[in-house]
Image (cartoon, rainbow, N blue to C red; front, side):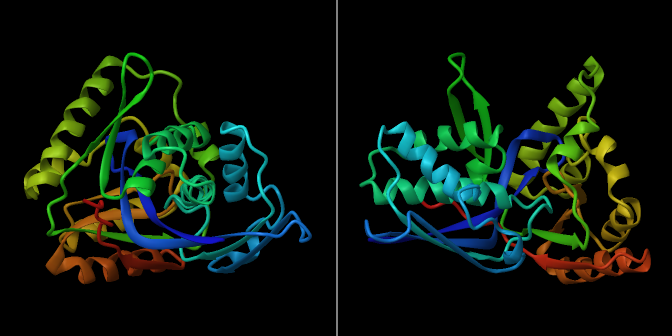
Length: 300
């Protein structure tokens, strides 16, 4: 028995939505899970595509760890497995590569086990494994998603409508930034003014994404919780932001923990903005690539 799981890249935070807001992008990793025979090796993993040489091919593989976690939760022993992975999403760049592995491992295991768990069950497991919802929720469900906890610590997930003429453009530099390092620079506490600022701007961002209102989006993408502290870890940030805005972007944010930067753009100007962002980084001596990545829409 074999099942193939295709999982989209994600961009998290979108400025003021730190650790609670994320969107799925039209770039994908593909995972094929095939049950082995009892006589075969317990585990075989092969990887191809972007950064494939860096993917673990033993039991430390993140997709396999999620696969085993699923079977542990349902009280069964993981079966012998052949896992084939094809990567299009770069590693350690702020585009949710780890979330794709976690989601694929859980969904693949559920399929092979006869689907004993619901999507809500898998979502809760994915959040537990990742530690926060902003990447794994849209990776699992598609679209743009806001996650909030209920009083009993379970999750409420809200789909955020996305105005079709708002197009994400990502520019990916040829250097990495680990999530752990990006989190290490954040303060342990914030003042009241910063908390109010982000609450107001997140509300405005949601309305701007729904309506495509240019002025609202320009204001809404500001943040005081994570971006001011992480910008220093991304050489050339200010220049790329300036180039994007001058080319007509609504605004620019750090994608996830970075170092990928994401501009929200009018559809008609996406290519111009893409070129401007790459040239800006290249002028600072940093190689970069850019892609126009429409939102991966949620399934009805």
